[in-house]
Image (tube, rainbow, N blue to C red):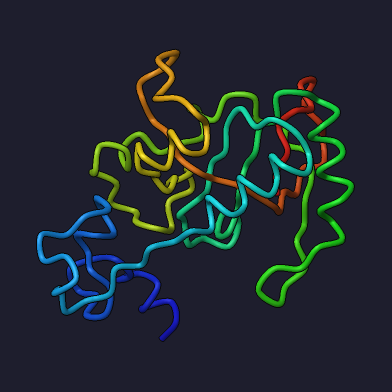
Length: 181
């Protein structure tokens, strides 16, 4: 039953959660919508706490996948390598939602290669169980609030929040600023 519910979450078949709000972050019915609009502040809270305690964050990606190896993963790239190493050491002693937080350094240096291009175009047929990252988008307003600037243009504009833990390969990247939480 849980697998079925996970497979329909945020789709037209989901009678509880608004599929339009899930897909684009807005719904024409607003507060009068008969379905739930899940407004997560998780990204903002995590970003703010990590940046205040450990150092400046360059990029944060929050996975929206449902598969065991990606669910709940958040990836944070700190500006300084030492900040990422300090965050890894400190955050492994934390709990979130009744579960231990598992943090490690990630070998990923370019998250664009890890993302599902079909999902970004709204065409992924694998849904939340895709093996490529489906990143939660954040609004431009939140983006400005968190990063203090508009979208960077080094690549196609794509700001996501993603963060996080569980990797079976314990190799460290030559660029240790990428912490996986």
